[in-house]
Length: 67
Image 1: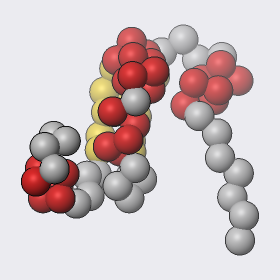
Image 2 (image 1 turned 180 degrees about the horizontal axis):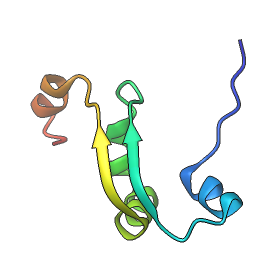
Image 3 (image 1 turned 30 degrees about the horizontal axis):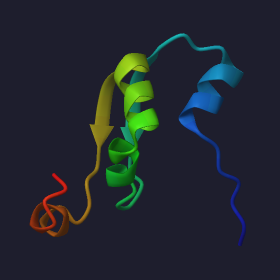
């Protein structure tokens, strides 16, 4: 099965939104790479007002000192 992917930046531009009021993330462990990537982090920090995140594998990331 194939899925098309996109970025939050691309969707915001396509839809013409100036600011995102609420971003809900449930990406099965991918949330850590989103926030460790400087470009994604800067985009979210400057364009998103509120974030709801479902975090996965917290113990694993705590043990690896990534949190």
